[in-house]
Length: 121
Image 1 (cartoon, helix red, strand yellow):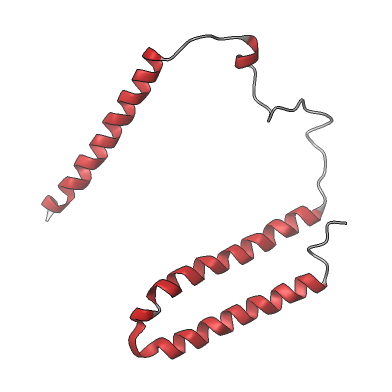
Image 2 (tube, one colour):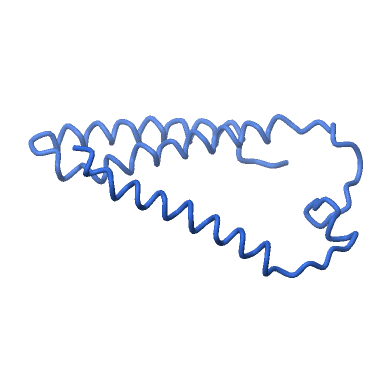
């Protein structure tokens, strides 16, 4: 039974060895031209202005949570779509179940749209 894991072990060892070789080669063969500008921390190319402790409006966090909720929908939809044809006699039940799920999410979408969650003003 352990013989079936030998290809996985070989592939893991090959990945570790190749990554170590590439890191070593880049350290040995790579150009070394340090400068104060290259050694300074990178801040997205913009000089920081103001305090880092500035408060953000709660709307940013609400939009992030809404994105997560609707992103989770795709996490449930994709495996369902992949296994839908293989479900045999349960195809109608699975279809109705997913239609109810999407309908509940659509009602939530309409609710947050009416509440003005998508307006940035």
